[in-house]
Length: 68
Image (cartoon, rainbow, N blue to C red; front, side):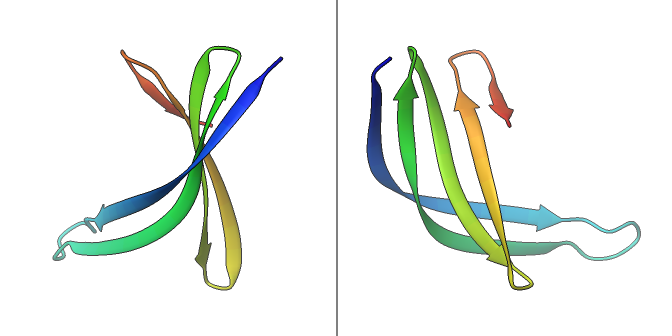
């Protein structure tokens, strides 16, 4: 199977809303890849939190998006 990969820049915005407290919003700029494999597109990136690397893959589709 053929796999294509394209480098992309990602703006990741997360909002945390604790019960009864004010919300906190975080913004990160990351580098990642859009990978096309078997007719499907995936967004892959890594982020570092508390000295741990978190690898994320998101399957992109017209009707829905799935975090794997």
